[in-house]
Length: 398
Image (cartoon, rainbow, N blue to C red; front, side, top):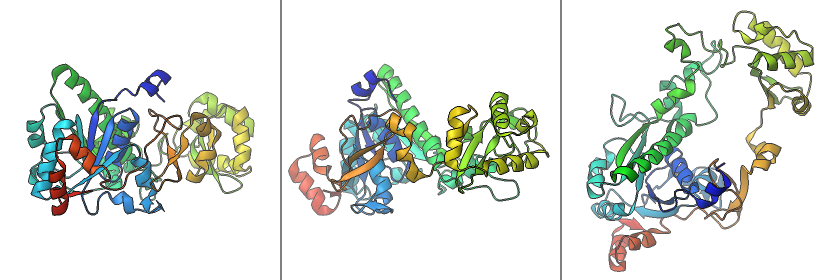
C-alpha cells in the first residue's frame, strides 16, 4: 500500500476523470485512479449501460463485480449516438483532465467525438484508449476478450501441459495486467508530462501487447536465439517437480515454488526425499520426481502442510479458493478485504487496491445509472431548462 502520508493525502486529488468504459479493464483502471484521490465520473449509455450491472452474482439487483469496480465514482448517462448526447459530451469534456474509453477504433469518430475532435476542444485532455489490439494494425477493429489477447500475447502458448490444449486462466490477466495497469501507468506519466508542457495526449493501450511481458521468462529462449522447449517442459510452466502444484490428502492443493537450491534442499530433506538438484532442471527425469513429490504431498492434509511451511522455509503455500481469502491471516493483517456500503445501502465486502485506502476511510457506494447526471451537467454550466430538454429527448438519463 502507499506510505501512510501519501495514502491520506490522496496524491491525485483535484484530477478529474471521465470513464466511458464497461466491463473490467477500464473500470479497474479508473478505480485505481479513484483510490489515488481522483474524481471519477462514469458515463454509460441509456441501454444496456455497463454489462457488468446485469452479470450475476448480484447484490440488491446489481452485479457484485460491477459494485466492486465502481465504488467511489459518480454516474451519468448520455446517449452518445444522438446528436444532442454527443454535443453534451463536447460541452462537459473541457472540465476533465483524463478521458478513458474502450471502444473499437473509429467508433467515437463516427459519433463526432473522436480523439482529435475532443482534444481540439481541450488540448490539455489526456485520452486513454484501452483496446484489444490497439488503434492501428490488421487486427485493430477485431473483437476479442481476455482469452484472445492472452493467445496473441504468447501467454497461453506457455500455459498447461504439452499434450493438452493450453489451459484457460481463471483470472483475467490481459484485462488487468495487460490493460488496466498499463493504462494507469500511461495516465500518470501523461499527467506529469502535461504539468511541464500543458499539452495532453492520446495513450494507446493494447491489451494483447500489454500482456506480452507476462511471458518474459518464456520469451528468454527467443531473445537468446534458441528454440524454446515444449509447453509444460520449462522451469516456470510446470516442467520441474520443485515448481508445481500438488493435491493434498484432503483433495485440496498446495503450490511448491522451491526454485532456488536452498529451498528445494530444505523441502526435500524435511520430507525425506533425495535433495538432488536435478529437481530444478527440466528433462526426462522429471515425471518420476514429480510422482515422488506428489506421493509425499498426498500423505498430509493442506492444513498440515500449512503448519509444515511455518517451520520450513521452502516456498510452500496453500492454494486458496476465493471464498477462503477474507479469513486468511495475511490478507486480514494487510486489510485486503473490508466491509463497505453496497448499492442497496447494506454492508458488502470489497477489496482494497494496493495503492488505495481500505476500511479506515469512507467510501461512496456504487451509484444508480444516471444518479449524478444533473449535478455533473450543472457543473459544466448547463442550465436546468436545457437538462430537462435533454432528458425529455432521451439524450441523457437522470
